[in-house]
Length: 256
Image (tube, rainbow, N blue to C red; front, side, top):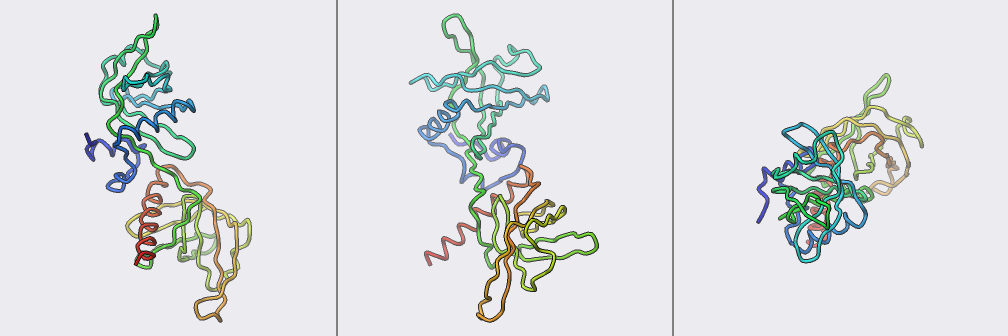
């Protein structure tokens, strides 16, 4: 059973991944179980949003009983009555695990009895979002995409082409060896625009300045490597989509 797009869009930590989300959604029962076992083993905290109460509560996976196809949850923590969870439907569970965004929807909460204790449980989800944040992977900007970064300085505004980018930072083309770039220089206000993917304001710091020869092997140009310092989770989504798109384009060119 596939999760409808309208439902899956709610599972993306309040950000939009739209049609690109299908590349991160697991629907194979074995894969889903494997990922949930990782969350259980590492005692990852799960956040649950109660829409009716406009409230978020936390729990962990207490057990995944062998052969029963259910998740058993630890005690829920939050300002609410735990017994209100009984028979609640369509709850969104979200977590972050070693740079991965995890999300799944529970159709209905049930109870699980272990000796004299009672816990809440649910059936294994039919699908699970597993969104890898590829911070160390830098994607080269395809030639058919316009990507630019505007720096708002104290007394000037300058725009530079983006050469490559990741969730951790980007590289700027500096053809005129601008004097504003030196190691450690901070830019508190930057606007990053990638056609069809990203239009955000962020901040960054210069981490590398590399001198290169242009294609004519005569002209000297510089590439400026910068690290994002104020990138928010919502902003990462558009970048994640673009990194994936650019990587796919690069692979197609390599095969062609």
